[in-house]
Image (cartoon, rainbow, N blue to C red; front, side, top):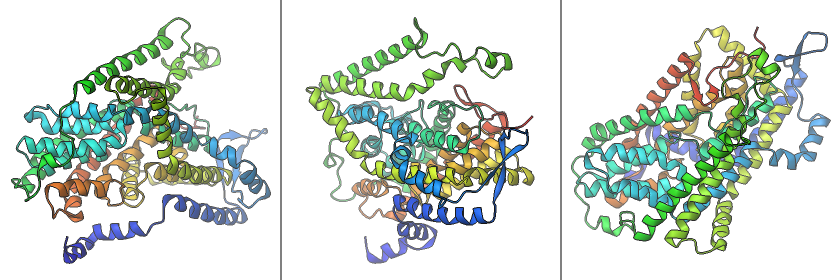
Length: 538
């Protein structure tokens, strides 16, 4: 790329986004600086007696309890910081959820299961349905973590080229599915474990009792709806906007699909056998969980959930008994990924003994090193926010401001989606952004009648839509390299411009879906209503 071209790409709004984002410190240090700022604000807030009436708790004399801001330099908070530091870190809900799931997912990825499943699903796609199938598999591949980016996107380019279509259109469709449709899927997975852990932490820290229980499947219906809405959008944008704009593909001299690795090689007999055994393992795990849920003894059913006072007051739903089942899904995904990965590896000869299995699990934990550092910083920020009472106070006053503004709830949720999308241009990490936003958004929306599941769903729509247009997204440079395999002078501005139509349409459709969902009051997942009774009302 020429120096003039590079300078041209740094101009304008996108150039400003790139330069501004590059100046931001690492998310770990963002949390560190925010903790320092939080300490200062808490001191001032206590001095001026900032307070709010607790929405659900009352004093012994029947008067509403008033929560006052507490300085983080108060002796009890300083003591809590140092004495409870190990507990604050290890009790950070996302930490356990993510590490448990990744133990299994690491085996499924390193054994080759994810890569072979993606290749097998896409290679023989009918030309007529090539784009929607690529979009579908790309969105489903989010369960495969890095494999979605590393395998699916270059493979889509090769398949498009072999079908006589522009390979950059294949890259665009796959990138839009893997990254733009980051939250769209047919079942919860690693991302749900990560986000719901943060949601649960924010809910617990708020001290608001809304009768909510964390359920990793709480956004299942919503992410399935996103999948079936995003797929035709990616299909339309690819075939009607992007590919006509790219024009007829004329290979650059020296570029040849066969020179770019083994992404398009047919599956070997061993890999096919491995996929078959992995499928059997998946069915076996599903059968095991069904037996524990519906079989004798029903260990994953709480028969007392709808008994006594709960039954008399109507404070239970037809699926209230299934609380243990929903909470078991984190462990269920560990067993599912582990069993499928082990079965595949044993058949495909990528796992020869138990030592290979343990090594793959160890490697998966090594990859989580940075996340552990980030989780340590985020855990203390969230905890200290709760100790200061500023989270609850901000949520109460924010909810009051929204109520007095007269804005309908669907509009409020739409604005939150847009704010998440804007913040995503500067802070790429999904967990870092949600750890920043959840301590205020979760309790504030509860006070407006929106469940923690609804808050999580609104955040994830905005988080995905702008992934594909920000150079700060960690895989953005990799996608640029994939594109330059086919068009040597394809630059940063070219990639961003190619993905902007996807981002706009995914964001618009996501906002509309979120607003309609809240307006209709539909459940976001099994046992996860979008709206809840306003705490303290009535």
